Structure formats: structure tokens, C-alpha cells
Length: 345
Image: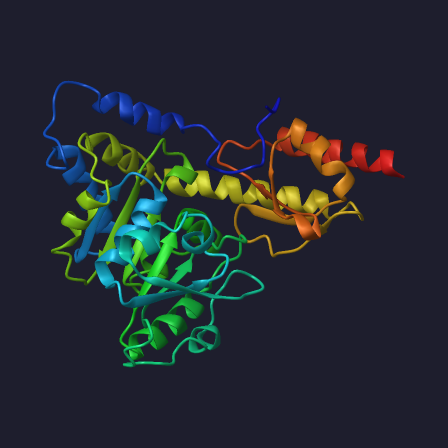
């Protein structure tokens, strides 16, 4: 559809060459299936080195499956999950968490995609009242669906409140690499050390072909392997999932990919800031740029560089950058925007 790399989603980018090589390297001979192979076990140890030895790792096919597994493992069907209204589990997973976990989602309205303790408190009523779903999980997304970031302190504050109220904290980390690279912190500092109980660790948006990982910290995970199987997330040839993560977590590839995507978003935002007709609506803290654009030029722009509308009522769009976005793409795209706007004058 587009003649150059577009800005629709970091899902649209290709597979990083190092990850593709890792897939090729393990594509030799036979290996025991369902995770009992040497590559999967080696990669699990790598995760434990990063997050701590008490981390339990379960690989999954995709982000929705990872989130569903995390929720099912820690909540019963009579429980509720508190999340931002923009959360992927609330907007973009076709009701999968409700269907598979049976839990009610309680969405909190936010301006920046970030939960606060005050927002969570709005749903902390009806406790131990059998007519109400009981809050059991709080789910935050890092980076958020609006490209914003929680500081480590903000995560710690939410975690403390969550644990005081006998709940768990889930982090949807579809873009966790972008968050860690931007904050300049380790994965562990932002998750385990901050009080996160379960993490959906994303790889697809940062150079993998497929695969996510669900990481449980200090939890009883005896039932998770059964939940994964029932959720159709158990990959028989798991060495191919694990090998990708091993490559991503080696030689700081995750950091290089995410840092580049973040830098491209900042450069795009800076160039857009020079155009009076464009208004950026969110802080550009990871690899997403949200902006209000003249409605008349959107369709023409999409024909050249595909991207998605975010809020049609406000003429707000979302532009995502990836590990393979180049400055040439940004310069050409911004030039096209200026050209289209000039026609309106």
C-alpha cells in the first residue's frame, strides 16, 4: 500500500536480521517439543538472570494470549480487573479477557493512558459484597497505548496500593523495551523491584517475528501450564519462540531496537512541531506520536504512508515508529504533509 515504511504500527515492521538469523540457526535437526528443548531452557535462564531467579517464564504466541494467561492465572471469574479505558485488554482484544477469564473489566477514564491510585479507588467499593464483582487485578500498560510512560515511582505507588488491598498488579509490556530504553532503567527496576506481580513481555513490536512471554514474580504458577494449553498458547516447536527472545536479550539488541524507534518518534515530533496546522496531543515518551491533523489531508497521506486514525471525531491520528524507521522516511513524510497543507491554503 505504501511506497516507503509507514507509520501505522510497529507490528508492520519486518523481523530484525539478528532474530531471523537466530531462527535459521535453530532450524537444524530435531528438538524436543513444548519447551523441553535446550534453547528454550537456556532462554528461560536468561530471563531469570535479568528479572531474578524466582521468575517463572511462560512463552506465548501473541500479546492477547499473554494477557489472557496472566489474568486467568491470578483471577477467578467473579473477580474484576481495573484498567485504563484505553488499555489493549479493554479496546483491542475482542473481549478475550472477559471470555476466557470470565472477569469483568472496569475501565478508568484517563487523559494520558495512565492509571493513578485515585482512579483505582473509584472502583474500590462493594468489597466482600456478593452482588458485585470483586477487584482482584490492576492492569497498567508500559509504555501506554498513548505512548506515555509511568515513572518507576508511579509504578511503586500503584503497586503499594494494590497490595494493601489484597490485589495483584499486572503490566502489559507490549512495548516494555521502548519504556526501559526511554527511562534509562533496567527491566527489573521497572517491574519486579517496583512491585509488579505479572508481566506480559512483548517482543513482536521490537523486531520479533512472533512470540511473547508471560513472567510471574514470586507467584504460585502451578496451574499456569494448564491455562496456557487451554488458551491455545502452547507452541509445540517452542525453540523457535525462545530463540527469538534469546537473540533479542543478547548484545542489547532490545535496547538498540527500542532506542532507535524512540529516537525516530522524537525526530518526527520535532519536525511536526514546526507545522502550525499540526497539534501533538500527547507527550512523546516512547515510539508513538499522536496528533490532530487537518481532516482534508488525512486520506491522501494514508495513500502514501499508511497510518491509523485514533479519534476520528477530533481528527486525531496515531503515528508509530519502528526499529527499521529511517530519517529519510520521516523527512519524506513531513514534506508530504507540508505539501498537502499548502494546497489547502
